[in-house]
Length: 353
Image 1 (cartoon, rainbow, N blue to C red):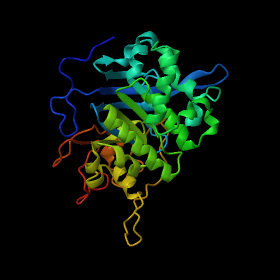
Image 2: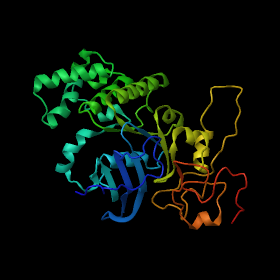
Image 3: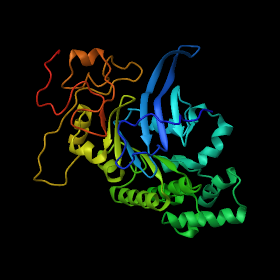
Image 4: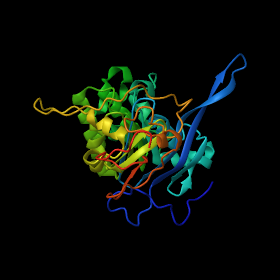
């Protein structure tokens, strides 16, 4: 295993008040490429670049939102962070240790501090186990406490997420979607982790239940000092819970800044299009919707240059041949964007320039 250097790489978009702090999680140039197999012998003919060079940091007690269209690679990134996928390349420093270099035995003790809440609680909960068995299992795996202690702890976890004690003897199918997600959250916090990756934890729930689950996550964060990577495709939901927001497109982060800066002053054309699609509960309010042409390109055959250029209304010849790197645009601080030009487009570059 490799330890993080004594002097960490400077974070280009640290949160306010993070001066002198070391990130709890630091992802460096992470890549997750899946082989595409074809033919009679299933030989690898190409690779799907689901995550293609991501840099990301999360500080203690912080929530980083991860937003993008379906297929942009955000869920794959989350699963790679907790090592449900073995990354193709890159580093995942968690508390100073590069998780990407660890084998299964070395990862086991670190999984206590690194958990995940999945999008679909029906798929993530074992239908053959009672809720009590499900909540006791993490302690059994790590050899914590005896059976009596585990049962008592399971009841305490149910109370912490707002479920009655008699839920311990019931099965997942006997609960509503919101209740099942609370069970998933209880399982995630059982070992008192430091970081939880939430993979679209409210997208399958009714709107009224979404707010309850979001408020539960915020309450647990304040009580336990948790850090979150919160994955969603709904910018309005992410704004409610996040300190910083990273915008993903085709396996890469194209903008990363404080949540209020993303909404107040978006600098990437893709971010602007996403924000323009957020509905406003005001019938008198009118705004111009930015409609992007075409579909998200295939990560198997991504476009040359800037991955967003086939859909960008401001694309130039430079965009078609040169990949933009994350940089701090003029007039901003703690804000990074992967675009060759500076927004707002008061004086857009000439076509083909």
